[in-house]
Image (cartoon, rainbow, N blue to C red; front, top):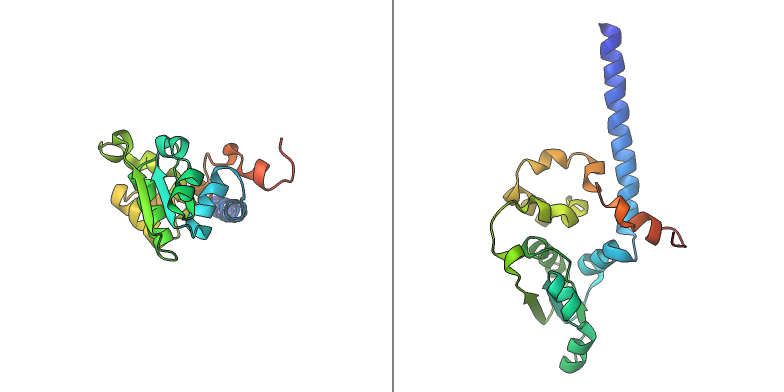
Length: 177
């Protein structure tokens, strides 16, 4: 029995160390991504100092031309839209942006399917998982599903399904596959 407990404890220790180690590597790679979805997200929450920000789902990202808006207003403009997302993601992004920069104008494209309808909103938390250590994001998770805090103890869970979207292969290696 003692041998079983020792082996189980060693296995659990190895699993935790593996989770933390790989999670730290993925976190570093995600934070330093310069292209793709993660590069777009990093620019929005960490670097954007534009005067005009456009938020919204696919309609915003594909139908609002930030260059034209910026030229017509004489201000800098960045399109923060994200396919298939709504107010849950953008409220957290807005809070992260607002701590370091106050844009002069925010344009928000309301899409009822993502902004008004009630239902399972945990599916809209995916892009925020990598920022879970941020107080604003943690509050968002607690409002939507308090049980998520237990899943977020795993560093690998935060990057689940993000690896295949190319943040590692297209942004960390100098050539594309």
